[in-house]
Image (cartoon, rainbow, N blue to C red; front, side, top):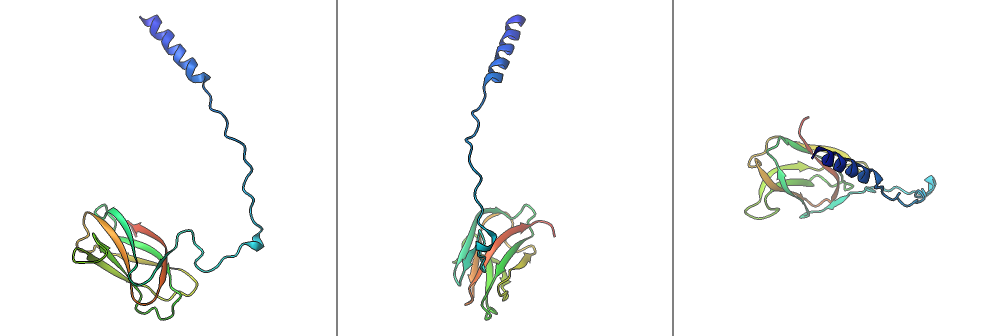
Length: 153
Protein backbone atom coordinates (compact mmCIF):
# COMPACT_ATOMS: atom_id res chain seq x y z
CA UNK A 1 0.00 0.00 0.00
CA UNK A 2 2.82 2.40 0.86
CA UNK A 3 4.67 1.92 -2.47
CA UNK A 4 1.44 2.70 -4.36
CA UNK A 5 0.87 5.84 -2.28
CA UNK A 6 4.48 6.98 -2.82
CA UNK A 7 4.20 6.35 -6.57
CA UNK A 8 0.93 8.31 -6.67
CA UNK A 9 2.49 11.29 -4.85
CA UNK A 10 5.50 11.30 -7.20
CA UNK A 11 3.26 11.27 -10.28
CA UNK A 12 1.09 14.07 -8.90
CA UNK A 13 4.20 16.20 -8.27
CA UNK A 14 5.48 15.57 -11.80
CA UNK A 15 2.14 16.54 -13.29
CA UNK A 16 2.03 19.73 -11.25
CA UNK A 17 5.59 20.65 -12.22
CA UNK A 18 4.97 20.00 -15.91
CA UNK A 19 2.11 22.49 -16.17
CA UNK A 20 3.05 26.00 -17.13
CA UNK A 21 0.98 28.99 -18.03
CA UNK A 22 1.51 30.78 -21.30
CA UNK A 23 3.37 34.06 -20.88
CA UNK A 24 1.23 37.16 -21.08
CA UNK A 25 1.18 38.82 -24.49
CA UNK A 26 3.83 41.46 -24.94
CA UNK A 27 2.39 44.92 -25.06
CA UNK A 28 4.06 48.23 -25.37
CA UNK A 29 3.85 50.55 -22.37
CA UNK A 30 1.35 53.40 -22.68
CA UNK A 31 2.72 56.49 -24.31
CA UNK A 32 2.72 59.46 -21.95
CA UNK A 33 1.64 62.84 -23.20
CA UNK A 34 4.21 65.65 -23.13
CA UNK A 35 4.16 67.57 -19.86
CA UNK A 36 3.24 70.87 -21.48
CA UNK A 37 0.13 69.46 -23.19
CA UNK A 38 -1.58 68.24 -20.00
CA UNK A 39 -4.07 70.83 -18.79
CA UNK A 40 -5.17 70.78 -15.20
CA UNK A 41 -8.19 72.73 -14.22
CA UNK A 42 -10.03 73.28 -11.01
CA UNK A 43 -11.86 70.20 -9.90
CA UNK A 44 -10.01 67.83 -12.24
CA UNK A 45 -10.21 64.79 -9.97
CA UNK A 46 -10.83 61.11 -10.67
CA UNK A 47 -13.80 61.09 -8.32
CA UNK A 48 -15.69 64.31 -8.03
CA UNK A 49 -19.26 64.42 -6.79
CA UNK A 50 -20.92 67.71 -7.67
CA UNK A 51 -23.49 68.54 -5.04
CA UNK A 52 -26.24 71.13 -5.14
CA UNK A 53 -29.23 71.62 -2.88
CA UNK A 54 -31.13 68.35 -2.60
CA UNK A 55 -28.37 66.14 -4.07
CA UNK A 56 -27.48 63.07 -2.06
CA UNK A 57 -24.61 60.63 -2.01
CA UNK A 58 -25.44 57.25 -0.44
CA UNK A 59 -23.44 54.42 1.11
CA UNK A 60 -25.25 51.16 1.79
CA UNK A 61 -24.93 49.01 4.90
CA UNK A 62 -22.33 51.06 6.79
CA UNK A 63 -21.46 49.51 10.15
CA UNK A 64 -21.30 52.49 12.50
CA UNK A 65 -20.78 50.39 15.62
CA UNK A 66 -17.28 49.19 14.70
CA UNK A 67 -15.47 52.20 16.13
CA UNK A 68 -16.01 54.80 13.42
CA UNK A 69 -16.19 58.08 15.23
CA UNK A 70 -16.38 60.39 12.27
CA UNK A 71 -15.79 61.17 8.65
CA UNK A 72 -13.07 63.05 6.78
CA UNK A 73 -14.32 64.83 3.68
CA UNK A 74 -12.33 66.78 1.07
CA UNK A 75 -14.50 69.48 -0.54
CA UNK A 76 -14.21 72.59 -2.62
CA UNK A 77 -16.71 75.39 -3.08
CA UNK A 78 -16.12 78.17 -5.60
CA UNK A 79 -19.14 80.23 -4.62
CA UNK A 80 -18.27 83.19 -2.40
CA UNK A 81 -21.84 83.18 -1.10
CA UNK A 82 -21.33 79.82 0.60
CA UNK A 83 -22.44 80.89 4.06
CA UNK A 84 -25.46 78.61 3.91
CA UNK A 85 -23.87 75.63 2.11
CA UNK A 86 -23.94 72.57 4.34
CA UNK A 87 -23.81 68.80 4.18
CA UNK A 88 -26.22 66.77 6.29
CA UNK A 89 -25.41 63.24 7.42
CA UNK A 90 -28.54 61.10 7.47
CA UNK A 91 -29.13 57.42 8.13
CA UNK A 92 -31.66 54.94 6.75
CA UNK A 93 -33.34 57.33 4.22
CA UNK A 94 -32.18 60.57 2.54
CA UNK A 95 -35.57 62.27 3.08
CA UNK A 96 -38.83 61.69 4.89
CA UNK A 97 -40.05 60.63 8.31
CA UNK A 98 -37.79 57.56 8.54
CA UNK A 99 -34.70 59.65 7.81
CA UNK A 100 -32.65 60.59 10.87
CA UNK A 101 -30.16 63.44 10.76
CA UNK A 102 -27.05 62.53 12.73
CA UNK A 103 -25.12 65.71 12.01
CA UNK A 104 -24.44 68.73 9.80
CA UNK A 105 -21.18 70.02 8.35
CA UNK A 106 -20.87 73.63 7.11
CA UNK A 107 -19.06 74.00 3.78
CA UNK A 108 -16.77 77.08 3.60
CA UNK A 109 -15.69 79.04 0.52
CA UNK A 110 -12.46 77.42 -0.70
CA UNK A 111 -11.84 79.14 -4.03
CA UNK A 112 -9.88 76.86 -6.32
CA UNK A 113 -8.30 74.80 -3.53
CA UNK A 114 -9.66 71.92 -1.49
CA UNK A 115 -10.41 71.81 2.22
CA UNK A 116 -10.37 68.76 4.44
CA UNK A 117 -13.23 68.85 6.92
CA UNK A 118 -13.91 66.49 9.81
CA UNK A 119 -17.25 65.53 11.23
CA UNK A 120 -16.56 63.73 14.50
CA UNK A 121 -18.40 62.60 17.56
CA UNK A 122 -20.78 59.89 18.66
CA UNK A 123 -24.01 60.84 16.90
CA UNK A 124 -27.34 59.84 18.40
CA UNK A 125 -29.19 56.93 16.71
CA UNK A 126 -26.13 55.87 14.74
CA UNK A 127 -25.23 52.62 16.51
CA UNK A 128 -25.41 49.55 14.27
CA UNK A 129 -25.63 48.97 10.52
CA UNK A 130 -27.35 51.72 8.55
CA UNK A 131 -27.53 53.18 5.06
CA UNK A 132 -25.64 56.49 5.21
CA UNK A 133 -26.65 59.47 3.06
CA UNK A 134 -24.82 62.76 2.57
CA UNK A 135 -27.44 65.34 1.59
CA UNK A 136 -26.49 68.79 0.26
CA UNK A 137 -28.43 71.77 1.58
CA UNK A 138 -28.23 75.49 0.82
CA UNK A 139 -28.06 77.52 -2.38
CA UNK A 140 -24.31 77.21 -3.07
CA UNK A 141 -23.07 74.24 -5.10
CA UNK A 142 -19.91 72.44 -3.98
CA UNK A 143 -17.95 69.29 -4.86
CA UNK A 144 -16.84 66.33 -2.77
CA UNK A 145 -13.59 64.78 -3.97
CA UNK A 146 -12.94 62.31 -1.16
CA UNK A 147 -14.66 60.78 1.84
CA UNK A 148 -13.20 58.42 4.41
CA UNK A 149 -14.18 57.02 7.77
CA UNK A 150 -12.09 58.17 10.73
CA UNK A 151 -11.53 55.58 13.43
CA UNK A 152 -8.74 57.23 15.39
CA UNK A 153 -7.78 60.87 15.45
